[in-house]
Amino acid sequence: MFAIGVPAEGDDEPRIGLTPETVKKLVNHGAKVSVRSGAGMRSHFSDADYEAAGAKIAKTDAEAVADADVVFTVRRPSAALVKSMKKGAALIGMVDPFSDADALNGLAKAGIALFAMELMPRITRAQSMDVLSSQSNLAGYKAVLDAAAAFDRALPMMMTAAGTVPAARVFVMGAGVAGLQAIATARRLGAIVTATDVRPAAKEQVESLGAKFIAVEDEEFKQAETSGGYAKEMSDTYKKKQADLVAEHVKNQDIVITTALISGRPAPKLISKAMIESMRPGSIVVDMAAERGGNTEMTKPGAIAEHKGVRIMGELNLAGSVPVNASSLYARNLLAFLDPMIDKEKKALTINWDDDLVKGTLVARDGSIVNAMIAERLGASAGAAKPAKAAAKPGVKPAPNGGKDATKTNGAKKRIPKGEGK
Image 1: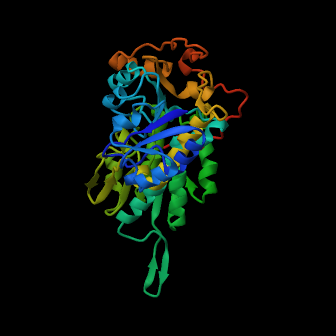
Image 2 (image 1 turned 135 degrees about the horizontal axis):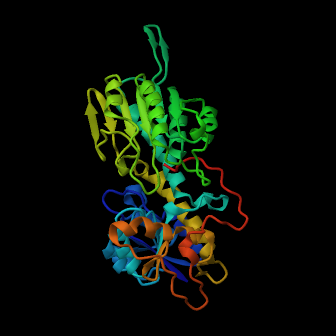
Image 3 (image 1 turned 90 degrees about the vertical axis):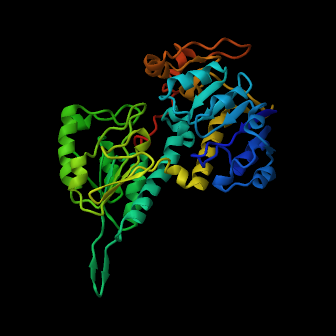
């Protein structure tokens, strides 16, 4: 048998990495599961639910992870928790690999195998493991609901004997997973929706949902997408032209939802103070990039800022505000990732370190950062350890090249990109 441990998350994280549904499946595969008492309560999963599914309830986080071969988390865990884990155990979660190099190095030196689900290669085989997409879908939906709740008018057009109520105008900036869901939700609520994105493929997706596409469609725009389907950072010249177009468009919008994020970098500034001042009093801006500093000049992460009658909503962890669904989807993502590592006949954990998905998500192993991209980005700021091949173990090959060739799959078809993943 192999053991799986699930600690409680921090006060600011209501989601959990394992649900009773996925516990039952793992137990059937031979896993011994330990869940911290109360860890699922904020997602409305009781200890009794976990016990009924076959899990053991641990009194403390340390007890939950002490004997685990695999630990599931939502956020990057504390150093204290990792010290409670046994060396060589795998920690799988959204570990925010591009920030806080010192803390990341500390986790690496603890001797665990650290997997960042945010780094999942965007290929067909990995679709069921894509945590960014599953969580962003819910975040895009919630962003529109929050905006509608804060907006002091109705969203759909209403024709009454007393007169007509005009439909609200919603502008979505960024047509990735979150943006597309925001467009679809706003359309279902009856708003007039427009959207923009720097990726040419987004135009067709936006229009297929019944929204109008807004962008400067020049030659740079036609090349503005990476091979993996993510948005490239645009030139200053293009940014200026696009900003002028957006500034003119924003004036007449009731609700603006921004979703733009570039992996490993601060959120780009899309909405200036002047643009906000051009909007009508009572208008709403929902900044979904608040966790990375925000897409507006006036965003206050974790708070609602107001400027001349316009409210800028900088709520953090929108997906976490629908924790039941978010946890259920996230837990299924983790199960899908772990499932190929389980020998169903022997009921044992057998990680193939040469698998493309393992190499692509592996950040650290045997005391060192093994992901070259992470080491390069973090090294300058905190002296991150140079990527090193993990020490060879009997019957196990170390991950070559620190996982930098993770996007080369065994003939797998490329996944059709749905956006920037936020």
